[in-house]
Amino acid sequence: MKAIVVKDQNAGLAGMKLVEMPEPSAAINDVLVQVYAAGITGDELSWPSTWVDRAGAERTPSIPGHELAGVVTTLGYGTTGLSVGQRVFGLQDWYRNGSLAEYVAIEARNLAPLPDDIDFNNGNAPVMPGLTAWQGLFQHGELKAGQRVLVHGAAGIVGSMAVQLAREIGAYVIGTGRAAHREIALNFGINEFVDLDGNALEDINKVDLVFDVLGGDIAKRSLPVIRKGGKFVSITGWNEEQVDGVQNIDFVVEADRSQLVEIAKRFGEGRFKTNIGKVIPFDNAIATYNSTDRVKGKIIVHVRS
Ligand SMILES: NC(=O)c1ccc[n+]([C@@H]2O[C@H](COP(=O)([O-])OP(=O)(O)OC[C@H]3O[C@@H](n4cnc5c(N)ncnc54)[C@H](OP(=O)(O)O)[C@@H]3O)[C@@H](O)[C@H]2O)c1
Image (cartoon, rainbow, N blue to C red):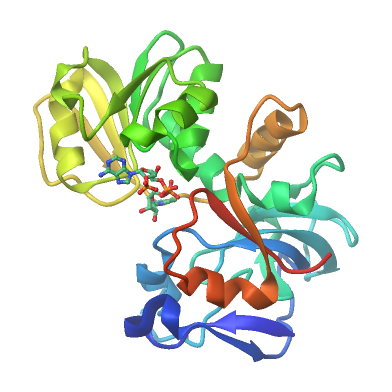
């Protein structure tokens, strides 16, 4: 099969190579999926799981890209819940070879059925942002109707998903970003916009939850905006700053079939909007990822038609 691999951690995206390699086989509880659409998650090449296995042993060459939509071609021994020929979408385990390939072997539980009315590109798009936003807001942030949430990077891939989910449950959503993001964030449903270059973050009324996708100084400055008993949830690393009475949480997104089903329902019913920046053919993926032109929104790699 054709696959994109990385071998050299220092080379980052520039180290990607398109190669021929054997198809993987489906292990116990796995399925083999023929990949139609794939995607990379922001910083995954900087995560240890791209380079070593769970025991810390080197596992390169590894195939990046953990988001996928495709069709099940083989069931592994003892696999239940999915069938051959079924359209699926989901998130590959961070320590296994990923979806920038014609085939991927993946645990069935990491996948959910992809409804017929969602094409593969649109099915792939919400995998990482949908799961990340769902887990950040509801599992870790315990956001409830009527609460106030500050979503950083509200026009971005994860942020725009968080805005839609938070509004849907009846939270008041303050979105942040650059001045140019105001309209985009409003279109995703925010109640209020804070331009991080112009407005003072410190001036907003207290919130119950901050969902952070930016980290650094913005993460530190966000803590005083949270009420006592509230939470700071991050996906970019541990917030070194601490404030009494505010819980700091940093997490990495996990696959979850029931959450994927819920997310797909919202897109299938046309209630949610994807944040796709560009759809590219598989053969152009390396060039696009290495281009100096910044793509706003999710890059979807169209692996097969
Ligand atoms: N832990 C996890 O499980 C997990 C899961 C998914 C993603 N992530 C990480 O989360 C981060 C966000 O991912 P994403 O895919 O949502 O990225 P993204 O689409 O680039 O979203 C970030 C948004 O914030 C804006 N922004 C960046 N810096 C800003 C600043 N200083 N002031 C105002 N706005 C700013 C960006 O604008 P510009 O485009 O103009 O810069 C963009 O609109 C990445 O670092 C990614 O690796 C972690």
